[in-house]
Image (cartoon, rainbow, N blue to C red):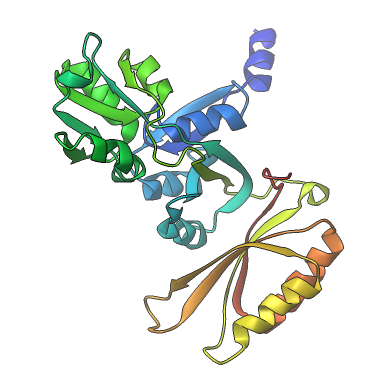
Length: 286
């Protein structure tokens, strides 16, 4: 009995949440980032997933935050802030979109293509070359593949990952149909509590507000530069409850922890509503 308890304790699977289902790009990113001892929890929306994380129903969540061609997913920044969740890591994933359908079908058999709006947008050149297809927007790429498999729907293609085709036993009709071949999505790894050793961090995500006056943002940017931090991202978001005021979300990387701590202490004094969203290891180091 004790050996079983010992085994279950030390080999307990991590409870990890994703938006979407198995075969989605979130699922692929989880498998790339974590070891195999995981238990996947699927959520219909990002907010459902973050709420579950805030209630300790899962240990981690993995969430897309920006795409190299489509830009930032702004509402996801707000969710991290609102629920006081911490970014503890990140993962960059090459996005490969593929056309799939039931086995035995070819491109000529396809009348409709279903997928997430972003996937359809990112495959616009292929779709322009095939204007006869009826395009149908869905909430999740992998879920389309699953529905086609379950309902045995003829004449309908899905744009999704190769993993989705494998899981749901579909035929890959056309691979890598995304317009821009170097298409990456950045995912952040989220946890309710902070767990990373300070000595391991070389990237941070910060949020702050500024007075609506000339030079306020430039002053903060000068602090970042003077402290030898590299600004890798800046994103503004309007404050709904206060018209014409904005929150700024920035990512910075650094080689020296002391430089970062100095910059953080200065910005904390100068800015309003300063908040650290995460301090973690930069996974995009050259």
